[in-house]
Every structure is written in structure tokens, then in C-alpha cells.
Length: 105
Image (tube, rainbow, N blue to C red):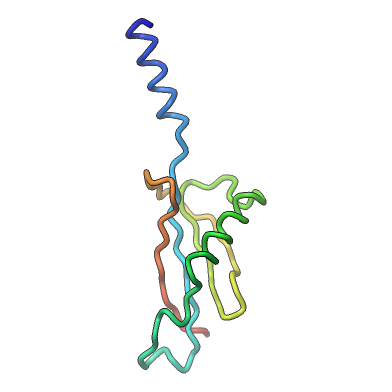
């Protein structure tokens, strides 16, 4: 194989590589806890729930048009309000999840 052809194969390999996504998970904390101490682990979903939900979003086509980031709300009732955001890719095939806690208003 000529060097030129090998370079073209490498270019195609990296151009078509799908980048991972950055997810911001907004976790709703009850209003009465917004000014006091709370245990963050008791309000957030476990990793298996997050993985299952993200897989479901992708399989059902909710991630079409994604430029690398999205926001999802988590309340005691479960996941709600999936919103595709702007560009924010990661080179990891696994999604990077950023947790944000906010008071229920």
C-alpha cells in the first residue's frame, strides 16, 4: 500500500470517529433543603440508571442533531426535560456526566 493511500485511510478513520458526549445532569433538591445541609448522593440517580437512560435516548433517536452536549433534569419522579445543547465533545467514548444541584422552585 502506498503512503498516500495509507494516509487517506487514517484520515477517514479519525474523521468518522464518533466523539463522546458531555451531559449536564440537573438534580432537583427539595425547596426546604436549599439553605441547609443535604447529602448529595441521596438525591442523585445511580450510575446504572444514568447509563440506561442515556442508552434509551440514543436508541430512540432523541440524540439526533446533537453537537456533543445536552442537559437532563432529574427529580424524585425520574428523568425529565432532555435538551440538546451546543458543542462540547469529549474524546472518550463514554459520556462525561457533570452534576448540578438546584432547588425545586
